[in-house]
Image (cartoon, rainbow, N blue to C red):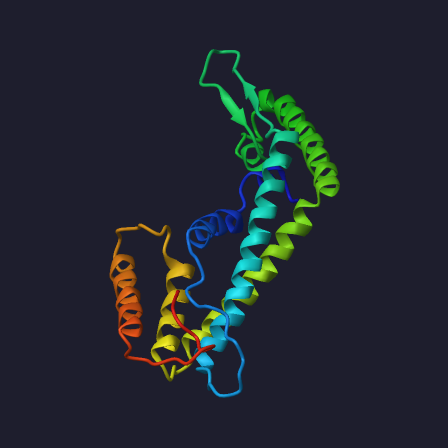
Length: 220
């Protein structure tokens, strides 16, 4: 933790909150295959299955670190130092090391404020690190980041595959939707259009454009 900002400004957390919203609203569109030795499964569908497992594991880790982040923020509230100049000027609020750096070093009236602020920020850093060690938040955040990277690698590999069936096309499209749309009912382009395309694929498959024997992949 470099300074007090670390505990309250985590870009990865914000990004995963957005993604987890989409994942939480999604359900797997494929039923597990029943191996009977006769069907040849589309490699894109098999790649989707691996990605699906990874995406759900990533989501579980995302939720875990979010819960720990909430606990950590409740245990160690952000520091806030408010200084009102003697002449009645605008109050100065200090919540992080960057705010201290903005204080005029050449103003002797700021010297005591700088010392006080740096001391309180250091105390806050120590409290944050102690609580972090007890909760295991940073470890959970690192684990979630690694899982997210792995999931994205699998998604890229899936999207670059050439499917050999409608199931494979649907698998790729499902991964795009679950990885990208901010919510299941987002009306921003291209998410409604992509959802309609996935529905079209489901309809075509259900209408028999692809015939599956017992145990083949099918849309739920």
